[in-house]
Image (cartoon, rainbow, N blue to C red; front, side):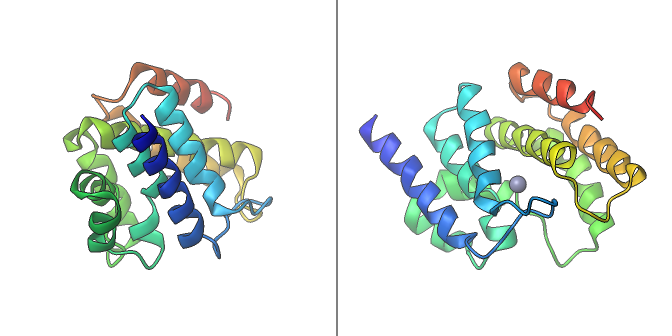
Length: 173
Ligand code: ZN
């Protein structure tokens, strides 16, 4: 237990450092680490294990910061690194293609990655509701909500608690 808490906090510290220069796109421009803490909290509340909570904290490091898979393996082990890579989009692809792949690949992800993906989309919808980007009109919000729903609809192994929270959040637009 002490080891698990230590690893989770080490990952929170690691993520805070990696995302330190980054802010959320919304008007409030929250520090990015708030997002990964929210995602990890949702995953922990849904009863997921410390490995998955650790991966939740790190889920955007490879995609959005100068972090490599090898670094995650060395710091947190293979299981955590593999789960983060399952959640890392290939940024060399056009945005529309990346979105299409998120929908297509959702059902093929591991149970842990599915839980993190569901929590990620809950966090993103909450951000859009509470602090939308200044240049987003209703149409743009609706498009993002529809995309998020298409992804979450494919998460057949995500915890019911997260799917229910997603559905409740989706209703709020
Ligand atoms: Zn995220």
